Amino acid sequence: MKKKLSQHFLFEKNILNKIIDLSGLTRGESVIEIGAGMGTLTEFLIIDAGRVCAFEIDSRLADILKERFIRHENLEILNRNFLNYDLRKLKKTEDEKFRIISNIPYAITTDILVKIIEFKDMISSATLTVQKEYGLRLIGQPGTKAYSALTVFVNSCANVELLFNISASSFSPPPKVDSVVVKIDWKPEIITKEINTKEFSLFVKLLFSQRRKQIRNSIKNIYHDLNDEQVSIALKQVGIASESRPEVLTLEEFLELFKIIRKDVKTS
Image (cartoon, rainbow, N blue to C red; front, side, top):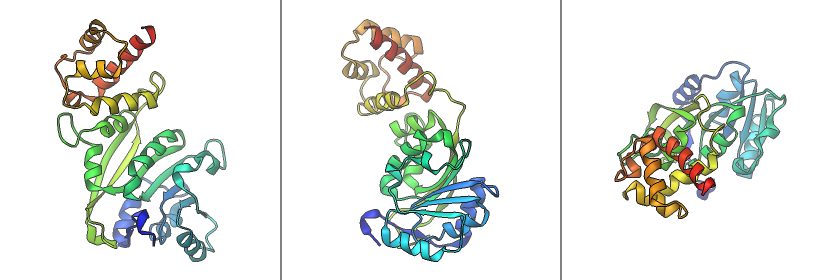
């Protein structure tokens, strides 16, 4: 086991079954598993899934998986880095979609989420085991400590549901934190047709880097070409007080403000 990969294996069968049951997986669907490890979850996925594409970056574990499941033709073990892999290569047909069901490495949770969102057109949902504190950030409310740029970015295109908690003792070796299973599926597209997702993510991230400053000053610090009047007008159009702070803005306010600010920047 490579310690640097932060691998903690979930062995309790009742929990593994519960994850799959709540994922919405139906017989014959295609599944992507990220970080298959020793194959404890894989063992259950291959029962109902039509295809399971299991990523495992550790070569030793990948070899163990291939040997263990050698007779299962619906399983493909990919000894590859999920983050660097073009997921479109997995598709057997143009309209094939995948559910992602995984106990993911906590250290790269954000990178995995960004990758999933990038390929959301071919992913019907993602059911993931994540650090509990991280899961709470995904559903954080404006003005709370859990509310962050991550919250806004993920919720701009996804619905996030916390399914259930998992104690550290359910893993081997036990992590130093508790975990939670989250399910992510997609909202009707509200930003991808009108807004560049990467630009919006950067906009929110920059504002949250100054989360306790007045929103008026934060915008001016980011967009130097905008004058005071343009910033004031933009805030007024959205109904945001100039002395408000980024940490209290709702998702809808972030979206509307971004549209106006980007338009102003392009015409400046």
